Amino acid sequence: MGHLNHADKSLKQRVARLKGQVLALERALDGGQADCLDVLTQAAAVRGAAQGLMVQLMAHHLRAHVAAPEDAGQRDSGAEEMTAVLARYLK
Amino acid sequence: MGHLNHADKSLKQRVARLKGQVLALERALDGGQADCLDVLTQAAAVRGAAQGLMVQLMAHHLRAHVAAPEDAGQRDSGAEEMTAVLARYLK
Amino acid sequence: MGHLNHADKSLKQRVARLKGQVLALERALDGGQADCLDVLTQAAAVRGAAQGLMVQLMAHHLRAHVAAPEDAGQRDSGAEEMTAVLARYLK
Amino acid sequence: MGHLNHADKSLKQRVARLKGQVLALERALDGGQADCLDVLTQAAAVRGAAQGLMVQLMAHHLRAHVAAPEDAGQRDSGAEEMTAVLARYLK
Image (cartoon, rainbow over all chains, first blue to last red; front, side, top):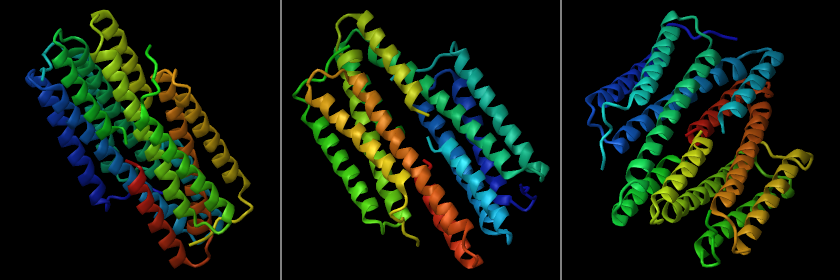
């Protein structure tokens, strides 16, 4: 299994945006006047951002552990890991 | 449209947990040694937490704006808002 | 719990379209030359159609069992049933 | 792009089960006495079956077009196709 290196700036930017969305959600509730469907829209945006992060991580796994290895056996086990991830999260 | 009042402690606790999960995700990436499928599991947990928050907010809307009003007209418009939310988020 | 009456033509039309999509999926596989991503697109269309049917059924439940009853107790139990459905299917 | 061959019995069995579920859904509505939450459960089962078929097709694509090719360029384009599919369906 590979490791995400420091270079992955775009992943960090995504997580920074996700953090900003959650902090905004917290402020909306703390204000005590938030409308439930407005807060629902913010919660759905957090869900969407987490989903986008998942797709980016899966794409990273696809490139690094399924397509890139020269050894066919490594590629097969990378494909199996990916299939397990899909079965788990595509519900 | 109603407003979420200060009393809604359990919503705030959910958002606090969600914030904790996103901060943990940030630390994992900053460490530079995170495994992509481990980070994927964390991202999926954030998605699940946001989803749970959405269900709680919808349940609040159901009680407060569809079931509770004495006026049938108010109940109908609360039901229509809810149907629009479902069509948008149940994809 | 209420019953869907014969009058619900639009529900039947949705299910008829869904059946057509599944039969087309079957023909694609029987042909033996189908491309996996083409068949995937068809399968995703069946998923989307089933999802749309779910939203329509939830909207029916909202109107008939949460907003419409004159008795507040009936409305509350309709709202509870709906919340259980959301928790189950909004994953 | 590869082609699903006749040999893929398990895919055909999944689609046959999916067809059975849709026909049962049709019968429930035709009966005119179906309970909306019962029909909702059946619709959710069709959605789940379509989802399972999608995962199986993605696993097929992973093995056949991302892991298996000897040529690295073919593997990369298979991975890109897969990433596009994930971005489209993991919403």
